[in-house]
Amino acid sequence: MRTKLLAAIAAVVIVIAGAAAFQRQIGATVLSAVFGARAGLDRTTDLPDGLHVALCGTGSPLPDPGRAGACTVIIAGKHIFVVDSGEGGARNIALMGIPNGRIEGVFLTHFHSDHIDGLGPMMLLRWTGFGATSRLPIYGPPGVDKVVAGFDAAYALDSGYRTAHHGPVIAPPSGAGGVAMPFAIPPRGSTDRVVVYEKDGLRVSAFRVDHGPVDPAVGYRFDYKGRSAVVSGDTTATPTLVVAARNVDLLIHEGLQPKLVGLMTAALTKRGITGTAQVTRDILGYHATPEMVAKEAQAAGVRYLVFNHIIPQVPSRTMYPAFLGDARSLYDGPITVGEDGMLFSLPAGSRTIVFDRLPVN
Image (cartoon, rainbow, N blue to C red):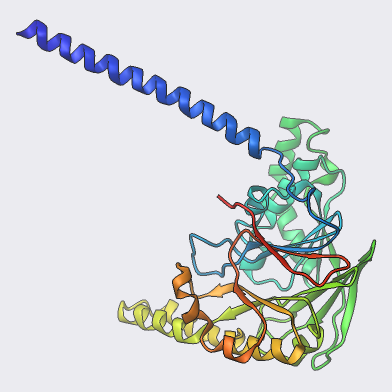
């Protein structure tokens, strides 16, 4: 009896060991296929000439498992730029098949933590992904030099380690970190825009927005070969946005639904988490509701409206109507609640707007 039991146990052990070995083999085979399909993939090569907007982060400071921090990729022809660099944005850019090494610059709208806390990975992946010999240009209103200097100081030791480990060809010391590109912005009350970048048919202009007490804060308009896109940054309703977005093809605008935030505030208050509850009350005053944005988009003649920087967390698409509220009745164009990985293509010489999705997991 004992011999039969030992034999049975041995047989089970052999089966389990064999299954484990088989699983290892399957895992290695599958991973090999995944790496072969994704590693170094550049999905931008098949894009037509034009202006393309990819959402690499549509979240807010509120923890959201489905959304990275504020981050938008702008592709104009063969040139790649990023607006804001929230946590997880650089990771999503890589997952989407957009080469981090080809990023030519980052445009910051303001210096709230959720718009800059991904700058470290953004600079690192661009540097080592291309063997860049010059630092990443980071454009922004006054104060951007302090932000960039702080990140450079924080990552100085890490940069030294990477050059020592990988060598100066892969990680050239001159390419580590960022270089601040500050620009002056129009005075308060002005609806003017200032051109902050112009090259190869791409013009980037900045305009002041109202995110007080955060100041300065700007939005950006991108114009390329007859196509146009505006990224609002964080702002409440403001006339400057309407002027800057006049007849624009695509408006990427933040959105906060106060009715849903009120539900969060009530839940936090009930649990005695008074500090965070007060924060959720405070944020109502310097963000735009979907209804506000819809009215501005209608007044500006925007062709397509996309929401990003979604507040509060909206974990299911079935909840999007609750987030939008009455926005669809106030704007007669198409509206999309942005999700990480969305791509909007505006081909040159056309009026079309082509929607696609790029993987982020």
